[in-house]
Amino acid sequence: MSAPRGAPATQAASHLDVPREEGLALLDWLGLGRPDFGAIPARELAPRCRRRLWDIERNAHAILRARTGELLAVAEAAGEGLVLFG
Image (cartoon, rainbow, N blue to C red):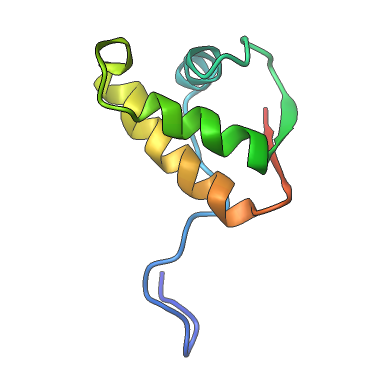
């Protein structure tokens, strides 16, 4: 995939494909429960993601931390919009 002319080569993804069980675990880890589908304002999701990326013992889950970093990029790209899941 290439960036449009004049655009930076690195752009945040607008969506994130995660296996169902991993996605449910990620939502639960972020304190959102385990809903099958829903939406959250990006401005509310981003701080949750940032807190889980703090380098403290309770955040020491390599896979969920990696997915959280990816989800943070999606939330930041969404700005004032919603992040949908399901």
